[in-house]
Length: 302
Image 1 (cartoon, rainbow, N blue to C red):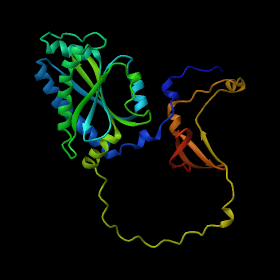
Image 2 (image 1 turned 180 degrees about the vertical axis):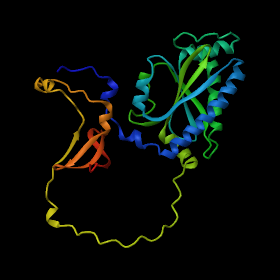
Image 3 (image 1 turned 90 degrees about the vertical axis):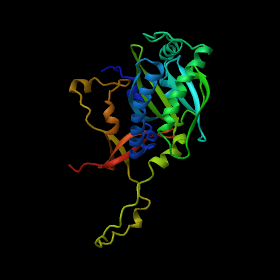
Image 4 (image 1 turned 180 degrees about the horizontal axis):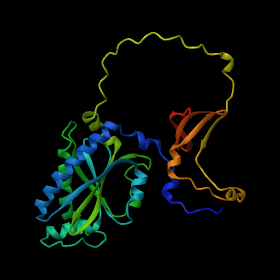
């Protein structure tokens, strides 16, 4: 059996930080705030440009700074801005064809189709900054809680690969919109360092209130005392995947250098054994620079 083609995405290890950076409540509130932003921003841009401009929220999710930068095209229009008095540099990615079409409309042109994909001139950047200010003003209105963030433009970049506004492992919150304008659809992306949004999230999604006092539990049997003889006993701990099926002929043809393809779902179906006994299910990922398995639940007793 020879190696089969697999996508790069299947080979990427899972970073546990991406799953834990936002609580379920924080993710829900951010989703709701940006859903509200979509409607008011689309209406304002339509009136401002005197041309139909529609928006749809595609997703709100955590991502590392390195992964966000790697996802951008080689040439784009990045706007760097701060949310005073919060710390951190935020990013707004707008495809040049959309920016050029908006500038054409601001200059009185029809903007019947998206512009070409190229770097913006200094004049175009200055004009398009007006559009950016409108977007950030409406975003600010969705987050009135203290400390009230005030957007402040810092600069622009057309080649994101050379941008180093944060360390590669900085966790970001990515907000992706789908914009429809000038007979075309393109994504618009906002990226906020989590540290920037954290003070706001504490205001809009504080930790849950402690539960009311529950009735006193019935006394249970005392726990079995630990046997100190077991302190130094070593027990083999291993992680396994199950569910890989091969024909008998494929098994007999296996040799060093062959690759056995695994489905992406199997990354979340690791079985952890203590000795020969299955104890937990887990998810494969990384912790620092090492491979690791996160225990997600007890193993089935069936």
